[in-house]
Length: 497
Image (cartoon, rainbow, N blue to C red):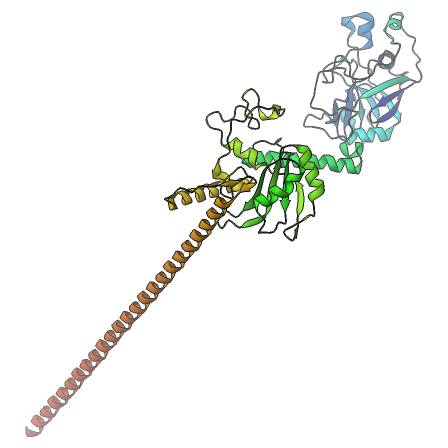
């Protein structure tokens, strides 16, 4: 008498002790025949101890015997069939999991190691594994939580009766299904935090190249979330505009209007901005070219890469800067956090923006531009420095500067402003150098005076010490001769006596 159990980790064949435990074996066989165990979880796996299943609810607190289906609710449980010669002595022993004495229903367990004599006399042993010990080993090695439930579900897929010595009760015929059910039992408690038994790791499901692409996308998204958190970009899903080109390796003498003229043959150029140093105004040898449409931008990308401009081979790529969008986002006033910073509409947010034609309500100001004004592109973190530069220029000039823009960019007014900035920079540098020289001279004079005073003070102290020593020597000499005279007088007096 045996049963084949197909699990999500492999097959197990069980031999039953039908002669010694007929009540238990009949319950197990008939439950298998009506497909009661199909889809049941191994809800408790205790490593090197037991693996328990047979509960359609998946909680370990449910399950009914076949006798309930045959005779009613009062027959839900049946009695123990404990024999002293049937012990938990070896791995693969099959026994009933009961709720107490004579409270057996549908749950059963497999032993996962030898000599579990602790369970002898407490549970009904009704079979043992004949084949499938490798499957039992995989069940034993499953990762489980603190409640001994596997993180990845282990299910009984099907049960097949290989030999049944018991006749079927008449009521059983209408319970036998035409086909074996698949999936979860209807009674199973919903749990969405577990991996299903058919789950396959991504590295086993995808190829090496596809897996690398997925990992790269996830890493990029994680980096974007970090940048959003620290305030470098307005949102993680923000994308750079697709009508802007990034041009680098420029000659320092190349001007905005030069690039405007050259790239205009591919379509309408909205702006051509060479990025410059915010202090000196010198070109940083890269620029942003904004076209009216995406097609013109793509055409320029394919035609202008490695082209020769002012004796330099330039490199052209699509822009990855979101600085212009970020500048607009930062300049929102009281309605910060509402509306779309891309198109200016207040009826949706940036994530829902479809690129409408609404006029933007956010105006890019001159305060955040590296070249001193206009609608160009800049580095995000240079905003505060550019603001300080603008304020300095406003306070240093009494006369208002007038910029004259040529049809293709900034013209003579811009060059004049840049020359004025350079001249002011040189004057400021010269003033700083003069102040430093004066400070060093004053420091030198002060140190020399202090040294001279210190030397004079030490000379006076040495002279006082020498005079003191001479006075002491004179007093000692006087005392010596006085003592000598007094001794001579005493000697004379003695001789006269």
